[in-house]
Image (cartoon, rainbow, N blue to C red; front, top):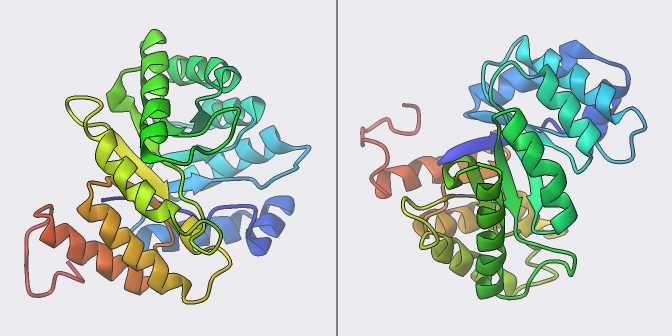
Length: 258
């Protein structure tokens, strides 16, 4: 399971203030802690509604690269902000993200090709998030096909079925699991899949319990990556146990610390 930390995000008040004040120490200490807790990549989001989005993204990428030698997932819907991050990045990054909207694909797939990036493909279009697993698979196929028109092969994509909050759309969690299973039949080898895990528990109580239960169910269905909080020890323990049971990691008595 590929772990992408969700914490470098301007939506969090403390992170937003640090970006405003260009507080490199705060950002770097947070990044180091995320990696120490198990993050293999860092999702980088400057926050919504910023007039200085490109400048903030460039600063954030350069600041993180000074202390964290892990891939960055540039999380923005703005092409200018995305390109600023791509230009500042030293290594291959993950673009987060495009959708199946024609205008989005026409903006982001050329950037993906130009900067040799990987890209997350969200299963939604101009009409919004689809209701069924079948419809999500259709959108995934549309994005895979369009990406190949730009010489971007499926092994550079992450398919995201789009997790919705269980408190508002309870029937969707099962459909997300079905979609992850269906995605594996869209290509050989199977494409990678990713979810924004904490979305499932938005505005609920017992968030960690819901998150880790859903993660275990998704891992058993073939999920390969998740954007999550690596500082949640209970969640990470479930992830490590799941890797053992899926025969992805070798067992040892001290597997939670290995």
